[in-house]
Length: 54
Length: 500
Image (tube, rainbow over the protein chains, first blue to last red):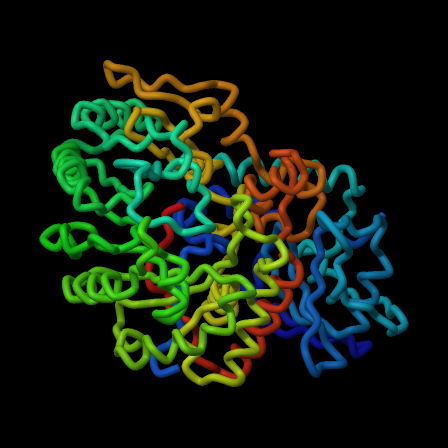
């Protein structure tokens, strides 16, 4: 997690890949060969379960 | 002129008065910022936030802090990660739509997902079934036939037609396919010969793995083809503890199905099958979930590594379902979370949004780039799902099967695929860029625009959004995932990968 403390007390902390850059969007999409057909956010197909012991 | 991106999402953190999370709608950036930075961003917004399908975004973060101009370094970060932009709103919306269209093209180019419907027939008569008319109205009786072998042969030739667009195989390489079974009830004893024929055919045509959505009442007829090398994943349905389930998932004579299902679930687990149990929930059975969880814990199923249990809201699919008894996904989430506070065994019951939370945990824990998970459309109905019924009709969506008027194509007698250009365009062209609400929505690429069928029912328009309270669900999931990440709590584990 990268952290940038600002001189005026303003703070921005990047929680995921700090190098994500709006200008690199197209390149990232080209490289994203895997996942688009299965690793989705929404389908209610029960692919996640609570950790053992919970 | 520098302004805040129209696709900036603010996520409030519980019990935190000094910071909020920012999420960007198309760069996939997740950041924590002080409220003064967030307030500064809010002050640079140039256009009103688009409204959801109905109502308001009730939990939109409000800032009382005086906006304070950010330092050069912070400004640079905010620009780089997409929260600040020089693009005018119209140009940014165009950029978003073009990007979403490319994301969709990527999904369209992925390996097709095939579903066989060996029959529309079913041995149960659940009141909320969206195919209820097929078994109760004689006008649809013709649909209930079992797929003939000759049709299977034609469909496999048709698959080769579909796969012409895929990259060619290397010499000696076999095409790998995932094949699902859906119905009606696909795994009836009566359909065993044709299911086995489909499986054999798939292995003649390449390599294959198999899964099914089944009511599990006649799984014992499939014992020898269940397992890692056969039907390896099952989605079954339980609708409460034994007494409640047996009121809802009934045979035509009114008798219940719980005992048979439980026996067959054990059989499947014993053969190494991953069993995902879906619980269809409304306001009438939600209070019975703790008793159901207790029952499954007592039976030892919850401890089985291949067994999982998840909930889904019942939608109004026919006139037998009263809308007032139904939940949306957010309401169901909240109801289950309340039950978890009171009943320890409810921890085995997943909420509709545990999936979103698990995805966000991956972002925080593994520095995972969310871009490959962006969805420009809601489900495989809009990209690469092909559903074949026993007549050789091809559908995009399983909720709209059996009506040849809306099929996307059919398998000709020589195995060629005859696509209906207009229907194909309608289904495969529905993306977040194809309607004016989603294309301006900050959440669109995390949501996919919602279910087309639900949008159609609610608005009369196919190319319209179905929000299902996504803003609340997404923001709550992100905040929860962040707090769990910071406290080092164990994450949900992924049981299997969805195909649709």
